[in-house]
Every structure is written in C-alpha cells, then in structure tokens.
Image 1 (cartoon, rainbow, N blue to C red):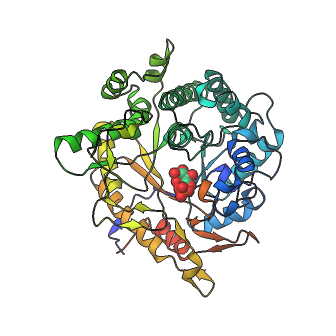
Image 2 (image 1 turned 90 degrees about the horizontal axis):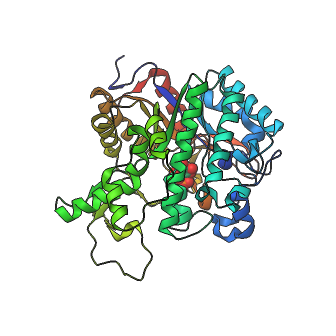
Image 3 (image 1 turned 45 degrees about the vertical axis):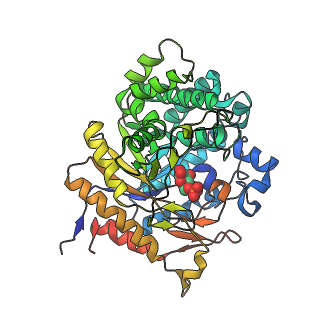
Length: 461
Ligand code: BG6
C-alpha cells in the first residue's frame, strides 16, 4: 500500500526529554542545580507548588520507560545528562553513581534498538557555578568544557550523536531579560554576555569532540520564524531585528562560524557588544556543527513599534518591535501558543537556502494540553488533537523533504508527561500519561498511532 506521506526508511522517529524534567532531582546522589535552589527559595513561582524533586521518576523507571518507547515505535531518543549529577558542584570529582546510571540507560536504549542522542545542557546550571556568575564568568566555560570531555570519555564509545545545548537562548531570555528562569536578572548587557559565553562554551565542546571522537555533534535551537505583519518596510525591519536577536544570534555562529554583521552593527550602535578575548572569533569559525536540532512550537509575529520605547526603561530587544496578534490565528489555548504548521517548512527552506542545507532533524515539536483526563475513554486518553498536530507538521516536513531539504528525523516533545519548569505538570505533552501520585504510565492514543507511523515510515491522510 502506498502512503500519501512516505518518509525515508532510515528516518529518525522518537521523542525528547531532559534530565531535570524527568529524573527526579531527589533520586540518587546529585549536586544542586539552579532549579533545586529556586524551588527551595520561591516555591510559589511553580504551578501548584510542584518542584523538580520527583518529576516523572525516570531514575527508577527507566527500564519500563524504554520498553514503552519501543512500544511507541522509537528508533531514537534524546535525553540530557544532568551536569550536577555527573559532576556535583560542576567542577571536580565525577560521581561514579551517575556514570553507572547513564551507562545503564544508554545500554538499555541500545539493547532495544533505540539510538541515544545526548544533550549536555538543558537549562540546568549547577548552583555553585551560578553563584560564581554562571555564564557571565569565563571560568564556567572551562568547567563546561571539562564536563563535556568527561561525558564524551564515559559515553562516547556508544553515543554517536551529541548536542552541546538545548535552546541556549532560553536561559538568556528567562534568566537575564524576562524573569522566568533563575537568576531573575533583567539586564541586557548581562544577557548579551551570557549568550556570547554560551556560544564560546559550545565551540569549545565541539572542538573537544572533534579532536577525540568519531560521531556527530551539534546544537539544538528553537527556531521561531519571525513573520512581519505586512510588507511595509517598518514591519520588515522589525521582523529582521527579531530574527537577528532570537534566531541568528546562535544559528549563524553555530553553522556559519560567524555572527551576522547586522547584529554586530546594531549592538555597536547601542553600545552593547559583549566583552570578547582574542582568539574567540577564530574558535567560533573553526568549530562548526555537524548536525542541527530544530525545536519548533510556534512562530513569532511582529510589527513595527506603535510607540517609542520609554527611554527610562531598561534596554531590551523589544525596543525594536512589538509582538503582533494576528487576527484569526490558530491557538493552542492551554499553552497560549499559536499553531502554524507551515512554519516547520519555512525553517527547513531557510536552512536549505541560507545554511548550506545542513543535516538537521526536528528535535522537538509538540502540544501541551491541560486537564487531559477530560479525554479519557476506557482508561485511555484519546488525544486526537495531538495526532492531528503531529500530522499537520509532518505534512509540511514531507514537502520540505520532497524539495530536497536535508532533514533526517522527527522527535516529539515529549515521551511521557513531564515537569515543565514553572508550569510543572499543568500542560501535558507525552505519548504516555503519568499519574504523579502512583507514577503509573498509560499509553495515550497517540502512542499507538506513532508506532504505526514509525513502522510504515509514513501515514495516509
Ligand atoms: C522547550 C524545552 O522549550 O519546550 C522543553 O526544550 C520544554 O524543556 C518544552 O518543556 C515545552 O515548553 P513548556 O514551557 O510548556 O514546558
């Protein structure tokens, strides 16, 4: 039977998750990271007061979870290592218990024909390093490079796809501009420094990997296409600046080995260039990625500013644009994010045309829904909305592949319902629901639909 939407036979089907969101930070021995600390100091910030201590208990349930992944058709799975578990405090001695744990997970995945993709940093700075200034401090770059080498050394024999960072712009936005991550600073100068040092840390990890290992290494970026309200030059300019700040600030150095000239010019004009040291430029240039992970949830719609920014307010990216609420947009009302499936295609065409058609995959895409128990029927959540969401995006991804975009896979966010930072368990994203009292996992309808999709390498619609 031929399918309308046939994907290549070796396409990567799977899902993604992160250490802090799944392992349970109270499990096993582990140093503190910023989430443990923030939850202790300001628990009211977290939805229903739920913190990172237990989450979905992957630490104790990984065997069952990997069987479930297999049942849901996974041939690959992306997880992250918790830096503060592997090296409590972020620097110094390696925790042998963590080495054993990650070895067991990796081996179990491989034994079940699921390729592990490993990410080194998913928003979870070790607390001691944050107390030294986090990414503001170049000593933290050295600590990260050492951590990356430790991880390559222990797991690189079996793991052949590595990622330096997941969505590195998010800790910059959350921690240094918009107050939704610790350390809750609002300071553009610091934000730029943090972003820049993250990129230096990235380049050093890529360098260390290429010197010593034989797989592929990349970065995972949340690419949010910036669509202007109109073709009016002021709207176009607003969208261009947004793109520079939120996409190209990481995309260009990671793939092209250099920052966009327009971004440098803009920061120069406003006297906000980061502090650099000699050799940085060459380092970035010499250490480009092999593989790009693309997280795509929602587009960004922008317009020229309706009024001039208040000169007494702190300098912000938003000095250059207003967000545009396009009439008639299709919303996921629970998460408050627009659903725009074609965005995935536009991203791929951009990568093909402007980024040398770099090898990529969709490393996250997904739909968070509140109170999913409403859709329970005979003990199973009938999440047809999630299946439609995935299909809608896959159709556009299929078109991108037909047009020769170099995209190799699709991973859903996420495998099982997990702890979503400040939103805790408010919006559920998984193929499997999790009862957080009993830790019981139950497959949703999307799990069996996805298994069929992966088996046939495509679907009919
Ligand atoms: C991505 C992150 O930004 O989106 C995940 O990599 C996150 O860690 C996911 O959980 C969904 O966003 P949220 O805020 O609903 O958890």
